[in-house]
Length: 370
Image 1 (spheres, helix red, strand yellow):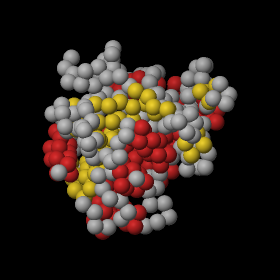
Image 2 (cartoon, rainbow, N blue to C red; image 1 turned 90 degrees about the horizontal axis):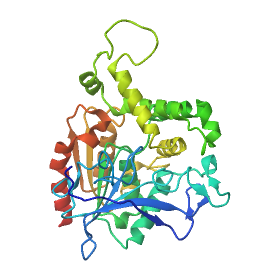
Image 3 (cartoon, one colour; image 1 turned 30 degrees about the vertical axis):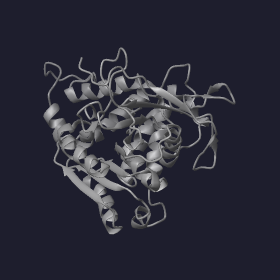
Image 4 (cartoon, rainbow, N blue to C red; image 1 turned 120 degrees about the horizontal axis):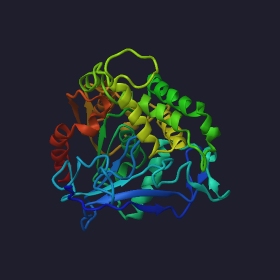
């Protein structure tokens, strides 16, 4: 099994002080799970922060001991890859509210000795970024060469440029938007309702009992439909049947696309917490970079160079949303490169369109490194 990064171990960092959230509530202790790849240079000028999407985590590249597959962006991070670990020091952090090592609803509440469940406070994308800032301070890095991410990761990137403009030299925003449309919120709400309708959810107090597997599985299936495109689903499945073609009404997964979605849902239940899904999707829905301001005036305060990448078949975060970001950046006089990649993979293109992104990102990083 080829592996230029060696076996990777997830690290953890715990904030010494409580984190004050946007809601005004305080959360602590707060632990962030993170991984690093490559070496930090002497003047600490080659650090790149990678931020994950909704269902991602800190394990972006390399292999964990015993794993059957590498990190979620392994095809982009490593020696000679788009984020070249021969040149750059890569940091990947799991968000607060998550369930893969960072403090979230499944973590133990020190005040009760039990998992937080729904007593966990509301968290926002801004809160996630504020926690990441503490991690970067802990690593004694005063300025990031770049902050990069797709989907929810791209939203975190945008928040970084607004919250900490002096710390971000460049921003790589992939398949993202500055806020959710009613349709995007609607998809998330159906998933949340599927989880909460599962009898095993028990108002979020299911830890140590049966998990709401059916609800979370359905939520994941709904999400997965939005990640693909009509073309990619047609090419992969069409109307192919798993059975002999005889009609039957036992409502098993006759069509291959049905079996695929059920597999995606079932496997997701094994690695993700239902309450984290509720909290993180809500954080995405609350995200609004401009708030009550004009987007141009908000982005005018940033000091980063920007690379904005979108994909032609992405209907979850369609290209027009990236174009809105680009337009506002150009009006505010920022250095911005806008690339739309022709792809049939839908929103998932940011994970699988390696060749196209690998032609764009290395020369961009090389330019802003000078």
